[in-house]
Length: 254
Image (cartoon, rainbow, N blue to C red; front, side, top):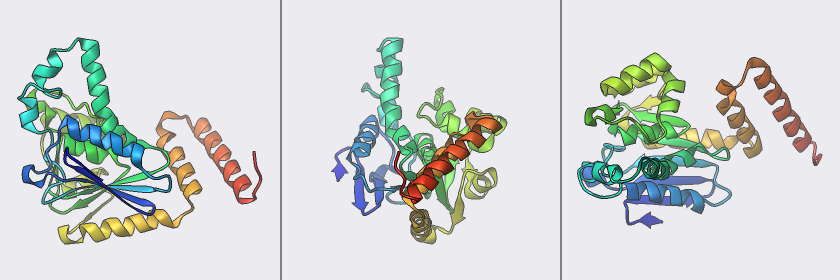
């Protein structure tokens, strides 16, 4: 399935691949692409367990299409400022939905990042659970250079991965991180030569699919909620999850 907006969805068994396919503009993003991404989330077959997000060509995504920012459409500064504050916030919430579905508890999402991952591109990579970076990857939260803030659901994930102080420095300066620095910070699951990116993602996907789906779903839920729980609450969540798994394995119903 290919959207006119420049995004493609391909499903093969338990793996879905979402591809940004505007390589002529380094997969620069538009609100139409975000809407297509959200629509894809509703089209996923029920047996999909892993979603791979990639960019066609030499870059993952160079960020927000500047023709949108400078124009008069729904994602432009002019278009958003013409709305009331509540309407503006609601519109941005619609944009965020193109990213946040990748947090779904029933899937594991993997970003395959080569070349630029700037602004919205960086936030799309952050929306995924795991990130495989090519050695030529360059990441930047560049919204500050336009006088804007990151608003596509990337700030919480960034703080969770690198801590408040480092996240502040990355966002407030807009500087670029190379793949090696991103790996040291914990932003990259693995870094590989560009020629090996596809194979590395395939290997990771195979490893994720090797475990029983229900166990993996429980594990993701445990880890995703850990930072918001106390030690006692996390231990209780572990006990409850393990009880469900034991009963399921024993064929005992509710």
